Image 1: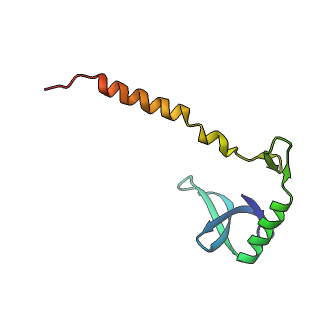
Image 2: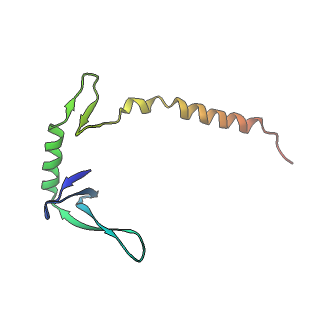
Image 3: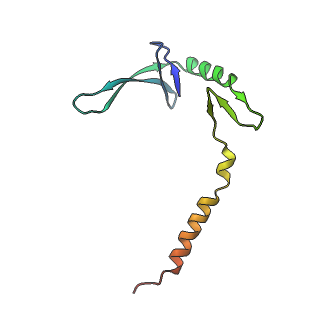
Length: 104
């Protein structure tokens, strides 16, 4: 999630590692390794919690029950409960295993 850094006031990606909060900033590509380089700034727990609380209060509810914030829709968790594709797929795998004759 992108938020404004408490230290440098630039936008970066929030990372939560246990009770440690930091912002990851992109600094470019390493000329030798051709890999992306990043630098980090530690954030206070209070700062992050306040930002998250403010963003949560700014979330708009739509009539169909979905929520969106900043033009991004949240995932409807009820869609994951169906599982019919996974169940059918694993059933077909089990069935194909049962149909194969044993090799002695």
